[in-house]
Image (cartoon, rainbow, N blue to C red):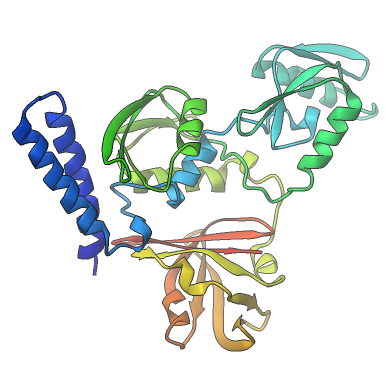
Length: 365
């Protein structure tokens, strides 16, 4: 079952090793062999769906779940100053000055946030109004900066971000110890390369600039600092995903609003924006809408034709697990007794199943 998806990844991995072995040579025979390997690589990929097969210990692409999670780890920290700017999607660039309860506070680093908290907590009878001394520069979660000249422009900006309450924001509680090395292969230009990433911003922009034909492979081991401020060694993609899920589940900054999962699941209609089962199969479910009913039935509708199945949610060793059961030939591909909740909010649900392979099922509104 796994041999086909694994073969292209194996060839990609061997190609990268072969490339770095002979890239400094200037021999015609080596170039000839390199061309043969490229040909075999491209030939082997033809049976994969859009060349997007996902191997949890090998290469990933721009659309692989891990790539999205890593980019969110590398986003700008924006939660720590929420008491000041009231937004999790932007932050105020240091240095700047605020006034709280008639006390002026200069902020030059994240350590100065404690001065704000101390002032607010000093009394239960004051109004705790925070006034920002403008102009200030706002830094968005994606490193874009904008000068805000006055309170009116600031209010407009916060109103804008409030239109997107369920935007998947930065994953807090996990810090990567840089530098890290990423090997890359471009299937269009047939060029392999290696890059050293030295900061969160560089990592965010590297992922942002990936094309669909890019395959990347992180060079392990990689060192991180987890939510408990403990250094942890990451040895493969699966380790990274597990560490990210731990941060999502345990770091309070990732759980600003408490949302009941079953209440969310049974509210409204859902579509499938991503489904990976050995290979990506999202397209097979285009046009379907899914309604999870309170009586534990689930209705999948496409072009006016409805199919009914069952669902069950329970906690297994502290993790939320969702079971889906359809009998129809296409929809039963969604059946999995091991769909574990990775993350969710009011409009997105992300499930993962780990075993010999890692599979993914996403629902969105």
